[in-house]
Amino acid sequence: MRKSGARLDRREFLMRVGRSAGGAAMLRTMAALGIGSSLAGCGSSSAASAPGAAPPTGGGAEPSPRPGDWPPNAGAGQSVLILGAGIAGMTAAFELAKLGYDCTILEARDAAGGRNRTLRAGDLVEETDSTQRVAFDASDELYFNAGPSRIPHHHELLLGYCREFGVALETFVNDNHAARLHDPLSFGGTPELARRVRSDLHGQLAELLSSAIDQGALDQALDAADRDRVLDMLTTFGDLGAGRRYGGSTRAGFPGQEDVGSRRRGETLAPLDLADLVSSGFWTERLSFTSGLDQQATMLQPVGGMDRIARAFEQRVAGDLVLNARVTAIRKTVSGVRVDYELLGSATSIEADHCIVTLPATVLTEIPGDYSPAHKAEIDAFRYTSAVRIAFQSRRFWEQEHSIYGGISWTNQDITQIWYPSHGFGSRDGIVLGAYAFGGPPGDRLTALTPGQRTATAITEASAVHAAFTTEAVNGVSVAWAKVPFQRGAWGVSTPSVLLTPDDRLFYAGEHLSMLQGWQEGAILSAYRAIDGIVASATG
Image (cartoon, rainbow, N blue to C red; front, side, top):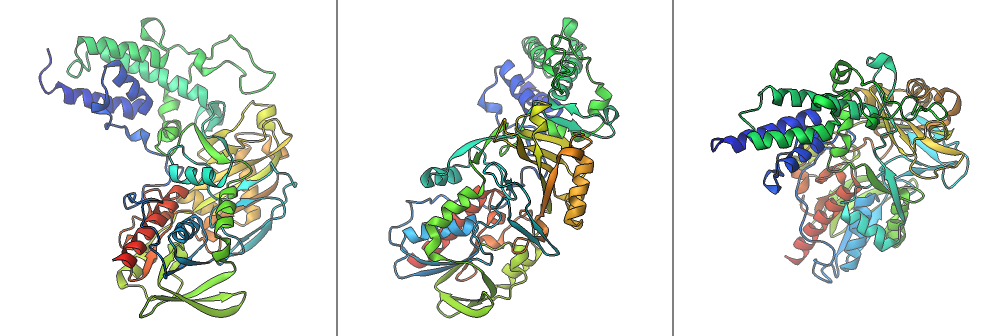
């Protein structure tokens, strides 16, 4: 019998499994041991979202009030200025109007949506030092989401608005085992299918762990019954053969599977070398990508482009929306707030009882205002990540020649990711992302390039994953969030504190001030927090 402290050893064993083989392996081990929810909190580090791919957790808790919980007619006789017509600003206006508030939204651009932006044929992409015209063919299927692109299943507030507004949704393929993983320093620089890397990594780790158990290395953590259960689990998890050895698996596919016409079904691939598999954290980080809370294998996207959500919000707040209104100053008054702005070059101002500021901190820091010293200090110090996407029109060679239908290929070159469209399957052409670099040196380096240099770099680096990029990818267009006027960054990465509190009659909102930085759901949560503050101040 084990001593009373053995349960802690079991927990540590599970943590080791999670760190080495991923969260899914840990859950299978728990099931094999007959362990239920009592250990549900011992998640592995690999279950965290990949850096940049799933934006980091921000500050503040989800507010408890939601639409329908606020006092009816709470805003009668009260006015609210909202700066910025992104998802946070339009959510605030939509909900405040229901409560009787008189709302005005000032938006510097000529369209609402903020970073929710979809590019189509003829659209203009303006950055601080360049201008691009989108040269895609005119087609409903040829579009590029130059901002948010996917929706997790549990972002219930955003999905609720989609239902309310009639925004049709479809599947976004986030993880495709037929996509590729590429490290120039591994496997001779040859891209490997995610399916093969995953299967061989699981198989070889399962063999190693089984061998360790057979040699008694975990006898202090496992009694005889647990030992047998874990060995059975590892045999299934790794598809181990006789003697619990891994000699390859049909799960890895078959020779030639990556190319149409070259497939030799029924043959088994030799396992990839374990030293290559573990020589770089690149492999395990990418394989655990969809274990993150906000990343799953299949997600959601609006049919026809993410801006379908922005347009649906815009229709409902159109009467309160002032476009081409660039804020020049934010001032406090005895009874509220005054905002100075330029409307198509003409200076004007407007006053209100309350103001919700949804502008990114990188933009707000350049606008004079009567902010408290503490609020101003946090605005000035707030950091955003850099991110770049580079899209091309192309014949769908990834489908026609490699049977890749949606999903993401990864490389540790600067381009980081290649995205295949999750709509229009079977069409001749599609829009493929030749690069999605987020944060850190890759994002910074691509941001620093001219648009022409970015597209050239993307073609060169993407051709190491798919040679067809050199001949098929055309009409390239790029977006570097750090250079987009009135955005100046992809998503917030600082942890907010002071900006979560009112600044007299000023309230702050935006994805950067939420638990879900970088997500539209976070923008909605931040709007609800601001509404809570305004309702509380107005009703006492």
